[in-house]
Image (cartoon, rainbow, N blue to C red):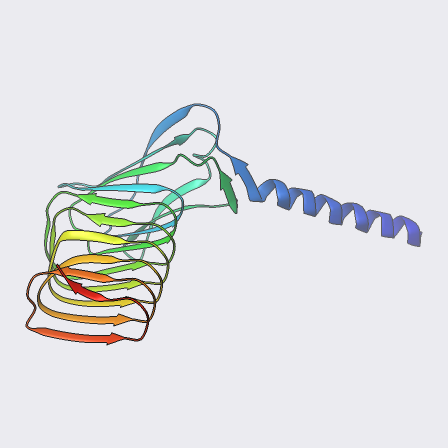
Amino acid sequence: MKMKLESMVLTMVVAVIFTSCEKDNITGRGTVQTETREVGAFTKVSVEGSTDIHITQGNSFKVSVKAYDNLLPYLVTYVENGALVVKYEHTANVRNDNSEVFITMPVLEGLSTKGSGDIDVKGAFEHTPFFDASISGSADISIENAVAEKLQLSISGSGDFNSFGFSIKEADVKISGSGDVEITVNEKLKAKISGSGNIYYKGDPAVIDDNISGSGKLVQK
């Protein structure tokens, strides 16, 4: 009876391990398809993983997902605390990921990325009181044309914030990784660099508060 019980337990453990392995790995293959997702209103975008994000300014909300058909069920899009969340669920490792998300939104107030998927923003996002952005992976963020009163930006990874087209009155930038920042600042720039990333800025801010303890530099272009 004891041996039978031990055999049953071993079988269950093996089954759990194989199920976990199967769950944790998925490879993109098949036909590339595009889905339109129904979501509520949002002013921010939060991304995890390797999905590339394309954001365009528009009068209404639209979210379209493009990927291999076997990846689409795992790639979720939903609104939480005012942010559109884009990430994979029920799988920890996605191989051959070709996923892209195309977003149209009226107002953009923040971006957050944890992973390797790049984010590009096009269109005139203007009159934003406060913009919050963070990069904790290798993803790059590029903003073509935007205006904000205040920017709070943190980079703890290797991703870059390539946004000379982003005009800000006051910017608070923190870099603890190797990612670089490109922005335009008009009145006040607060820069804290404890990593190797550089801050390149255009404009002529009257007040510059810099705290540099790493190898990164603050450079006016």
